[in-house]
Length: 319
Image 1 (tube, one colour):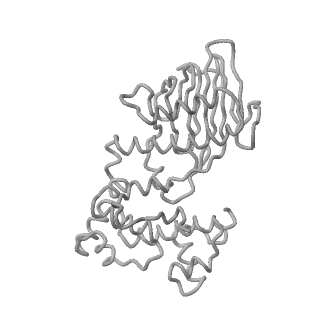
Image 2: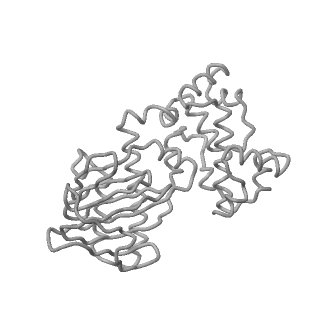
């Protein structure tokens, strides 16, 4: 059975390296919270390394304040992602008000990862759905690192299309507690986070440079897609250049220019980052050493630690 780490491809399917990267943008929900708030109110989101937070306004208004960015007004149907695990505040006013840390505020739990929080005064009402998600594939970490400090999808944006429909489904689900509500909200949130990232890729000039820009290059992108699909293959500069239908020297120069590192160094790092994901999923060192073409587990372990800074055993135990 094919795994998500090696998505199925077919001979008649066009190569879409960026689309495949977004396919691998798999999230693991840490916590989701529906908040019913009355002004004045303020919620402090602590920093969570390696995670992203999101907020969508079901009703009312809220101000999102992320360090390094101006406070941002969120209206009903707006969806915002804070992708870098930064601590931040969301509140009823543009200027500071007393805040409470969300992880210490009294909440009514409806599951291990879903709660209802009621907080604030007797003023204007606001309902939010917020969450924290972790990304669990090397593609995710690389892509998320390139994102700005805030991503926002505005309900009032021209032709919001499918995004507005998903937000409407989330708002409807958040209005009342029903069986399966946690499952529905978490899956809708995953879709919205991917949509926000896709919107950034399509609209921000910064997404046309670096690794994301290289994925969209018609030649280097093909070579990247081949490595991402099959990191275990014995890639060489020659075989990668063949994937890109370029000469070896032209490919080497173009790859380094677009990606920011030589092709074979990228292959080595990608191979070990993929191995790290497989270790967390339960693969053994022996399996990965054989799959990656190493003659011994010790040789694989040395290469793995050189690239990732951790031993295979410690990564496997952390999974």
